[in-house]
Image (cartoon, rainbow, N blue to C red; front, side, top):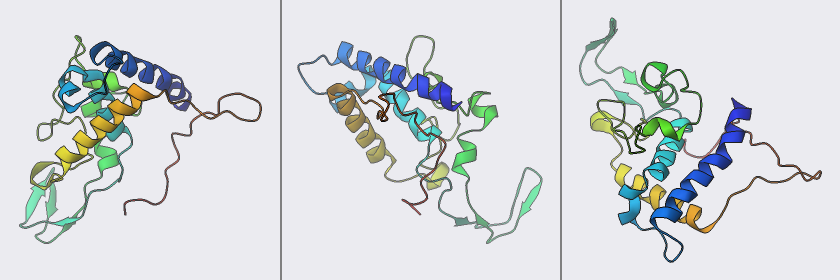
Length: 182
């Protein structure tokens, strides 16, 4: 998977930049109004959030009443923590290739954005939560990610570092940084 993803990332960038060039052109920066006409760029952002959530678990919550879930009894007051990492890689939801980075999973055969596969969340991932406890800042987060990503892709081509031998250093997409949001 690592080698496959290392090979796919330059193509993902090229495809997103081609979409931006075709819709926005080179005479102006992308704006928020361009988002509906840049479905591949939005799909890339959705896939980044699905593939590498910023936190692997959501904020703990206590059950407000006793409940049963898939045959398991949950007493009132039980602390419940959603495993975002697992939810975003659920093969029943995202397919057998759930461990692969593939922005196309968020697009239909015409290249338009699909509604998310989850009934309670149309984002295509649960990184920002779900249900009544979904992140109140999700729209700000998504808009910020869109405008920053679109403008970076409009302005620059991102390349891998090169080693002393002049060859590209492979990306280590499996290592997690132990820090950040806790």
